[in-house]
Length: 139
Image (cartoon, rainbow, N blue to C red):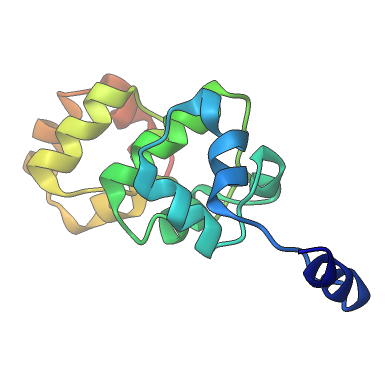
């Protein structure tokens, strides 16, 4: 092991493991599957989310909206703030339950997707959340 450490230091190689990720995110109680996903995306601590957007998180979570939403809320609860991007995910602007209901019923994940619906459909969707109506009106 000391030889391996010396070789890694000589070539400026840092060896990380899932154990260090599990330890770094222990207080967050993420699903075990996320530890591997974080490892694959070079996410080893909370600071690695600096300068990331919610869309980056969506890509990191392998485009799984539900996993992204859960991860987003957990990270936000632990002080991680994401930078803005050209669109907004519903979980960035609505409470967790309403976001999940809209996703389940309409499979809408971003504000820009509302442009694909007519006025009657939009009226039905926004009845779930008046805040959503304000957001759509500004886009």
